[in-house]
Image (cartoon, rainbow, N blue to C red):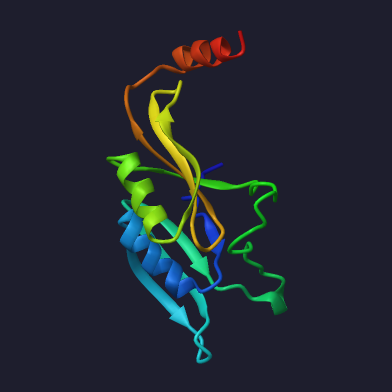
Length: 150
């Protein structure tokens, strides 16, 4: 079986504003968008350095919903997150929060050789932001992971 590229597809309240946020904060580049006469974005594509994220506004009449922009503080975290590798995770997380995101986890060095933290963008999606500290084999990552539970 051959596989084609895999594209994450987000439903985002105010897709146009989300594109502005993702380009300003994460350095993404808008490829194009298709807009209804009403102004809703029916489809957009944003390039994150070679990986395309597809997006649209919600279409509740078709069962296509977006997450709440600001979930209750005690609400469970989303079952999906997007992991974005950047040159400087601390700087990008600071920028994301300054632009309206909510810090979920401050950046810290991780056992898997990355410095990473998490932010919820103003549109309700969780982003794991990290940069590489060291290249590790899967065996070394497993050794370190196991040690966390010792």
